[in-house]
Image (tube, rainbow, N blue to C red; front, side, top):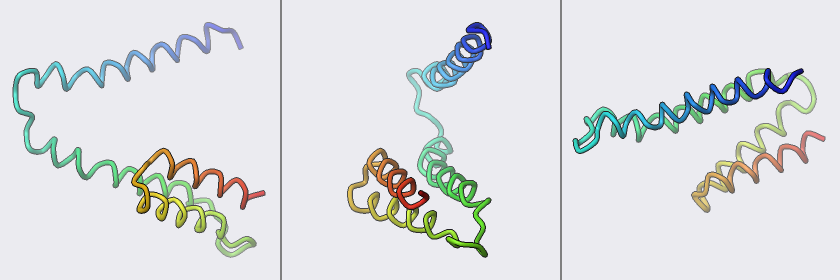
Length: 104
């Protein structure tokens, strides 16, 4: 694959991501954002995380060995680590390492 074929999509996606991050600052400069944005800010991240968890376990074979135990144990450890330290990065890293160890 040519470098241009890799570089161009990265530049396009980085530009789109930067533009979407910039939009709220342009729209609400000097104004109070609407209440719906506060609601979305509070409730969307947990819903997205729940969707990611469901997506991650959608292909687990619950009727075959290891019966989804690595996934369930990793999810429980991520939840426990997050309740303990409230650090998303720590929770994700601990859960990933535990899953990789259990999935071997």
